[in-house]
Image (tube, rainbow, N blue to C red; front, side, top):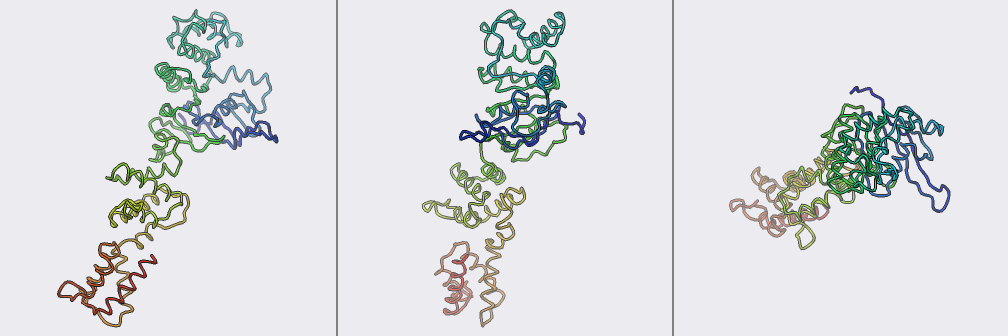
Length: 434
């Protein structure tokens, strides 16, 4: 497929407003912009009422937009006359609906043939085309039955055959398996996929069921009349202008289609950390990461949650473990550009603020700069060690004071009691502020 191929469907600044200016005004679609390329399988995905079927009907020319441009197969639908729209429907589109919409008084064969009648094709040509399609979709045995004497799956296959008899380049499917059992649903979905892969039809499929997303090249996620994100399927890439690299975040979007972006980003980080914790703790960590990514929680606050005892609402992680965890979270968030804004504590700043060794050196230098006496190199290293232990809460304030006052030969720093008390007082004031 050529890289410079033009889109077969292009929509610009589309909006659909029902009852404009009235108290019951409803904006069904808002600021829709998209391009769909020949031979793509695209899914419009979202909950009921999100506007996905309305968008499909706009592309089909069955509804008119309140504003915007809709170009399908080289035609600007907003400028076509009624006669030109009819011709466009016959030659460019095939439609498959959830409710089948077969003519109840006609047999399956005659329903399939019906669009050819309006194309003024000869009876022989019509019958031959219908025969080929019905054989392909396994409905030849039901060709003389009317719709009421066929199952839902059989009716839908008749509807698909009818939509294809004029050989349109685009096939639109609005919740095509919504009324089918799982077995028949699978048959119909496989048919749509085959029509895309083998017949090179451009397929637009509307659904609220995430189990079908794997069939699409791209998924347009919709909510409240807007396209909220567009995701490409890594297993069904095609050579197109819009081809993009599939990230871990996009893979998770397909697995968890209804999660918010903050929740999905939290999962990206959690998966990278490979945390060996219980499911309960993993969920709490994930919740904290989500709050951090959405700027509702700072790095220091996240550290406190990880470090606090469980009875105080924390996770009871060791201080060093909690610090390492927060550093990794910030690093991954920064590397993957997952933060919702560029403001806040960067990874390097966090390391400087929380790395116990760096902080101990910083505190030690501060104390010695104000100290009138001198300490040997070994005394200074011991002071740094004990300060690091205090920062990590491995020793108490009183224990630190004792170690500073303890003679050097007995394992302490060897300060006099007054200096030890002064050092500890200054350290505790600094740690309280931090």
